[in-house]
Every structure is written in structure tokens, then in C-alpha cells.
Length: 601
Image (tube, rainbow, N blue to C red; front, side):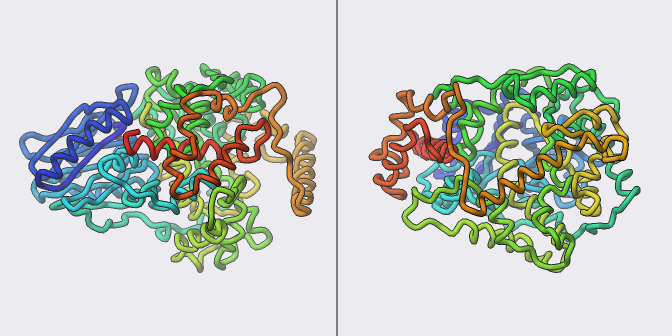
């Protein structure tokens, strides 16, 4: 399913809030329930995706047991989404904790156990298919939308979550824009009884793994075999596949796995026709021999174009970027495919962040959390001009990194970095984007399914670094895909004496990076000058009457927190052709709009 709403609690207040919740779902998201289940102390509703897919809330009339599944799930026995009746039988047989160990995917499951009088909630391994809860005096409400929960009753601003968003575009850990609305934890089994959400049981921990266990040739073979098995598993449940294909490594490796697995699929890319990603994707598509669909970004953007993005994202991602780059492609092809695949978390197979650990990569010592926070989390624009007393963003994210890795301090620092990447980057940033898209049609990253993910996390980080593992597997699966150049001009195959000349662009690129770092060390940064001949989405949107009304400092919901004066200064500057906080302006628009929507404005 695309969305759900559940309330546990008895009394007139619970019934009133329930009816309001169904009305708010239609107002905020334009959705109506496909199935509703109500008792005096429990109410649940399922909502279909935009393409109509997903099994509605399933109830066994003979036992009273029921199941609601949001997202996409796969069972170790080979079945998955669409077979909820079989999953319900399994849940009744062995219980939620045991079934959680048998599942993989991108999901939140709600199982009503009539015999025990409780509801069991299971979240996926990374908490990627985001779901939220809010406690009330009469009980608890759960939903796949933070904005929906916030609209049920007065909701105070979570200033920390909002500042994270306004400075990084991400709401981290369990936070949302609202103090009383929190994310469910990853890899967890919750139990709800008598209107109370009990503390979760964690069914999967990083400490169960054996990092660096897979090395050399066995590691290459294991990774390749797991890729192919995962591709077949997805295709068995979702026969009509469309997969992202760009100029980089991860989507190319995904295409290679699908080809080698012998499953049917098509590919897609979004962007300007002459963009390197788009050009190279078309070359790769010729090699795959599969139908390829290029969606060109719409150069014009109106306020009306943003409205579907707000409904899907709850404002917790950049609605301007989502409306321009993600929404058109997904909406245009939603009815033609069962699922869309992407290469998110493929960076793990390439140990993408491990360059930050040089020259001590692999050492059994705590991460330099401040270094990681500076390089990967507290990144530009990070302007603090909107805040009277801004948080120390580097220290804030460094503390988060230390918290999530508290049990891994004696592990290899490469494993600690992988864990921080999953818990803080994939859960919050990628999870929010994918949760938004999953309301249009099913979407998943094969790299985040449990068997493949555990293979990657247990592979020697030295083999993963410098893209070696991916290059080897690519060249063995599909040599022609590996030989085709990447966006930066050199091929995706391993370096040999015969092809060494093709890697000259890599030396040039490395030199430019060193040169750029040197200038940054001297405090010299690039200018925020618009691309010639184009008008930014920000300037286009400022011409819209709805945007000008929304961003009036004197009436903004953010005024009491940020101050009308600071808002006025920022927004006045944002109406000029050259403005250094382009992205932050979009984040401000997204947040203010979400706050207005939650309060019915």
C-alpha cells in the first residue's frame, strides 16, 4: 500500500480524531481508504498508491486477524508483495519476531493479532520505508505520513528537526518537523496494546555481522552471485521492472545484474538531453538492448507543479527538486511497470566514503566523528543567517555518529563508517525520497535488500575501495557495460596494461580535485552564478502569486521562531538573480508550506 493510518485507543476522543484523520488524509494527500477496519478500541485504514497497486488491508473474518503492508517486502521462501494472505498465515504460525528475520525489503507491516489483543508493527532493516507515531491522552496513532499525524491536533514545532532541515535538507534520527511526531525505529518489532506503543524489540543489529570476512576471489564471486539472486528475487515478485540507468557505477551494475539474471526490464534516466549522465545512459541502453526512456527536465516550474510533491513528501525533502526531477518521470510511467529500481546504497560496494579514513582505513579505533560530520553531513549551504543562536552543526552530527556507533568503537573504522552511512544517510535522506516515490508506485534499491546488503558489509573494505569490487564484477557479468566510459571519461572495468591509456581522464580529474582542495584551503570558493541562458526555479517561483503569499515574513508560521527581520533579509536577498543559498530557499519554502498545511491553512 501507499499509505496507512492506525489508531489504538478507546473513547469518544479517539473516534473523533479518527474521523478527522480520514478527512485530513483526503485534504492533505488527496487519498481515500481502500479498506477500513474499526472496533471500539482499534481503527485502521489502508490507502492505495497513485497507480492503484498494493493489497488493501487484509482481514481473516474467521479469526479476526488482519494485516496491512506498506511498501515492498520479500520472504526468504520466494514470495513477496501481493501474497499478504500467505504472510498473514505465517505471522499467525510463528509470530512477528520470527517473521521479521525472514523478511527483506522496504516496508512497514502492521499485523493484528486478535488472539493476543495486540497489533504488531515491523519496520524494515534500515527504517527506510518511513512511518511515524504520535501519542495522545486516549492512546496512540501511527501513519506513513508525519504531516497527517501533525494535522490531527495542535502540534508544536521541533526546532532541532527544523534547523537540521533548513541547513542540510534532512531531518535526522527519529525527528520530524513536529515535536510530538516521531519516526519508528529501524529493524524493530513494536507491540501496541490497550492504546499503548510498547518499547521495540530490535531484530537485526550490525554487530551480528563479521566485517572483512569475505576477501579476494571468494568475495568477488559471493557479491556477483548475491546480485544475480537479488535481481531474480525482485523479478519473481514484480515482473515488469523499470530500472534507473545513469553514467555512474551503481545503476550500471544493477543493469548488469538484471541482464545476467535473464529477467525482463527496461531502463530510464532523467535530465537534459545533452547532460553527460543522459548521453552515457543512452549508450549503455544500446548495449543492454532493452527499451530505454529518457525524461527531460521541465525548464518551467509553477506553484501548481509543487503541490503533488508536498502531498508525497510531507515537505520533508526539497519539494522544488522533487517536483522538477523525480515526480515527472515516476508519474508518467507509474501505470506501465510493477516496480522501479534504483542504485541507492551501491556506494557501500565501492567504499565510497572510505577515502576520509586515509591513511588509517581499517584501523580498529573510533571514527574521527567531527571529520566525517564536516565532510559528509554538515555540507554547504549550511547558512546560519536565519538563526539567532544556530547549533554547532558539525558537533551535532558528530554526536549522532558517535551515538549510532557506540557499540562499534573497537570495530574497524571502515565498518563504523558503513554503519553511520546506513543509519544516518540512507535512513533519513534516501528513505524520505523513496517513501515519497513509493506512494506513486513500488520502488526499491536491491543493494538495500538484506542478503545483498549483508554480503557487501562483510566484504573486505580494501577490495571495495577504489571501485575494485564493482569493476571486477561488472567486467565478468557484462564486459561491454564495463568497457563503456563513465561520466568522467574513463571506463568502469579494472585497470590492465592493455587499457591503461583509457584512464588518462582519471589522472586529470584527480589533479583538478587536488587543485580545488588547495584553493578551498585558502578560503577561495566558486561563485553562485546562474547558468547562462537559464532562469532558476527560485526566480520562476517568486513570480507566482501563491509563493509570494506563502513567504510573507509577517504572516509566516516560522516567524515566531526565526524572527520576521531575519526572514525578511533572507527572502529579500533570494529575489535577486545571484543568491548563494538557492537550495536553502527551497528548503524554507518546503518547511513553511508543510507547517501551513498541518494547520489547515
